[in-house]
Length: 98
Image 1 (cartoon, rainbow, N blue to C red):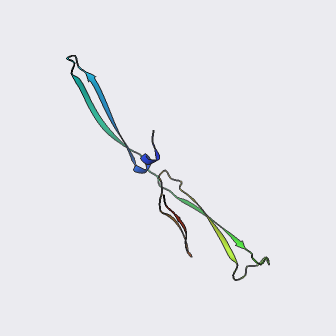
Image 2: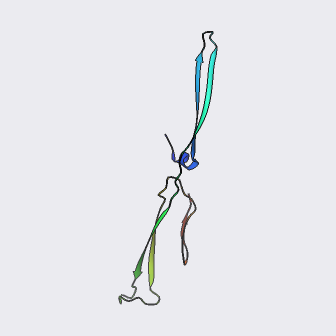
């Protein structure tokens, strides 16, 4: 069975060995290694949302009021991503690492 570690590595190795005994009672063996490439498709997606916070309740945007931003980040590929950083024009919002 393929594991996430196999996908992240991009390959799976396997060694097959066969054993038998010939008519003279002597053991016969052979081994054959095989490495199979596992296709990797790294991908990331981000959806940003924003909500105006009308702190004084006057329904108008005033200096000093704020906007709350949300970031929905998804690793939608098949490999594990690390050192994920959300950057806005105002700086780093947050970062994650596996």
